[in-house]
Length: 346
Image (cartoon, rainbow, N blue to C red; front, side, top):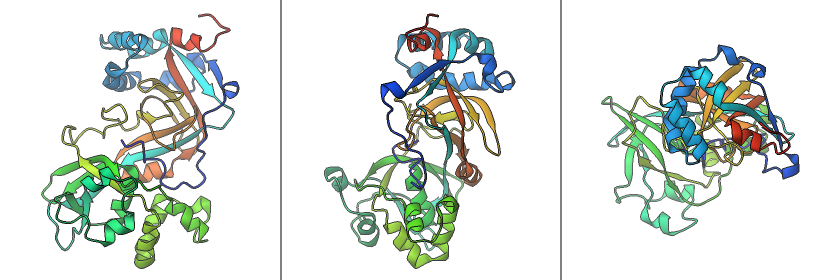
């Protein structure tokens, strides 16, 4: 999924963090018995997700463990024998949020209902940085006549949020599906419309969510259109035809992500492909072994993660509600884990 955009939807109250100074980082090895809910998890499901991306990991220790995993070991024993849980922290509280793959309704040809095009990146935008603003792209004829349209959808608000997520599916009236992924941008900085609504006094920070913004724009169509123009950034797409419609979108490792088992992390701290134990608090606690297969520009810090919830409206609602504390523990190969603790020996 397009980590470059996902996670900056609201820009309101998110702890973004910054790379910690070396003296602020802590690395602590934890016993498996101290992972809350470890024994009850479906380790085989986590191992299957790990196998989806571990062949793409480059370091010898990871490649060796991937080869062992491909031999079909008992999943729980595999993780407990060859990994150590490593808690990486920098003195800031953990924050878990969620993301999803939107599904829009569309058609291959425009008509009275399907009037809003999803565009490929035009050649002119590749040559200029920045290029035209969102307002200029949507209110002029600059995009027409170039054959750049991938499909047309019926809702400009959902199209705006598709650009925020950076990838999604277009459900066609004939039953077909077009999957699209990030294909470029116009080079203008992202400006949060959630922040703008708070600045105007329309909402307080704690009230703002994707659904709240969508509903406000629809209730106020003229002001709503102007609000969307507040964000000059515009995202172009590319059709993705090599991913089965039943699989999740491509993550940062160029493999399909898995609902409830893929987590986006900051790769400055967590290797992509690594198993990650999630203990999320809040109203619906999660205690589950996931795999770090994605990234995001707002996913910064060793205790910041974005959980993939799947495709469609229900997944979007669940992801949008998630904003909870907890802790994240990375499962590292044994020697690698202890190497991060110079004063200790395995």
